[in-house]
Image (cartoon, rainbow, N blue to C red):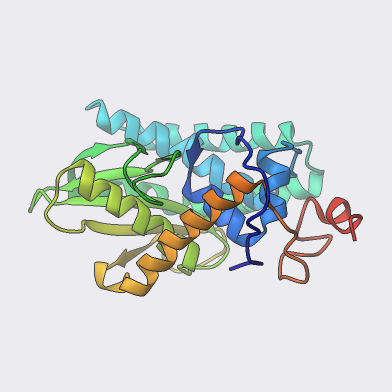
Length: 277
């Protein structure tokens, strides 16, 4: 993945107790970026598209499915209005320009066109929903790990017809595509769900992608079959956890220079990182 880890560095204590999929994915992107965020806790700029994703989950999906979990009826128009208000508040909080605010609301309109049909579909398909927290000790990267793996599943649904459990993750993107990081995340969550619910098989895992550009249907549901997770992919995923844990123990986070994320427009820490050259 990155440069070989040294073996002659004193083991340090990490400023956290949990390893998550997002931590692993950031480390894969750039070890130095991981260090700046989680060790030095340097601020990062929240982009408009990042806000769209967090606002969709925090401002719409979470309130809507919390109501369904509690057995309450949905007022979808009211939820959509609340989502718009939530997004506007976030944009003001981040002090976006008038142009960015206008663009943000335009993208919001594209996303929310799918909200009502989507919720109707989900209520017809599933009889029960859960939003569990993932936290386990005896799992990736290995049984001797001193870290816990922690994360939040967006949703687990139980199908009406079969009673089968389905692991669901919401995404808000500019492209309707499943990435390597997405598959890695769903492999993680699916494995956890199989152990937590004592399943004899790997559960269905689905990415529900809302695209923030005009398109015929929104969202698109990507069903990721267990067969798509080859033994090699599983091995790579395990290695990613192991490598990150080793880097944490050694406090060794080299810059990922000349990578696709190295540039003033693509990294919040570009100037700081390249000042070290």
